[in-house]
Image (cartoon, rainbow, N blue to C red; front, top):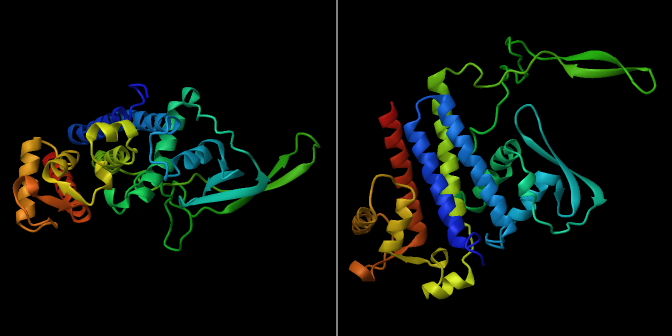
Length: 316
């Protein structure tokens, strides 16, 4: 395996992108500046996911390749398909009967545009991360990534003037036959939630979205499969497969989510939380202590939320 396609290289790059997104979230005070930095990082993350899929570094039990190919080409499970969105932002998948063979060729990362990569990052990559590791993301993760149509009290779509949109008949001439063709179209221009946001509303909206993106990058690092060479070097099973973790590993995991501390301080925080019964341990002290993964991950998520809340307070 080349140095570029070593699984450790991919993990490091995803963690670097997670740090960049969290730093942008803390440092930027103007919506435009935050959006530029976040978009650049998300495009890099999408490109890295595709490179990782082509290099087969992700856990093979995950269907990342199939889902990405569907979003890219409209082919899923050997069938031609199409994704559509209604005015409320809900997704619909339509499949047709024709069967198509997947040739297994790499996804064409070289020809992907930045706009296409940004779209792939929101869907399906974020949706896949939420499905594979829901505990790594907040319950409403991704909710701020889609435009929501503004609707009236009775559920009708509203235009930019606040008036209900109705269907109007439009007569067009068929260019081939020259016959008139009747089409029905919605009147007016659709209004969306957020159209009237000021800078304060926009920056709050973006920070919520960028926080989800940072969490997704951290989760993607954990979704990468350990190579056989890495297992032999480490002399032990990969960390994600363990039910009981040493304090040092827990400290390293905490560092991914909490800013401004060293590994030593992170280990001290983990040890103190274990003494207070915040998660399950084997009851031992010092180097012999082992921490149960599931309860630790729940506590770790609380620390991540607390750190993000502290960042928000510092920005106000």
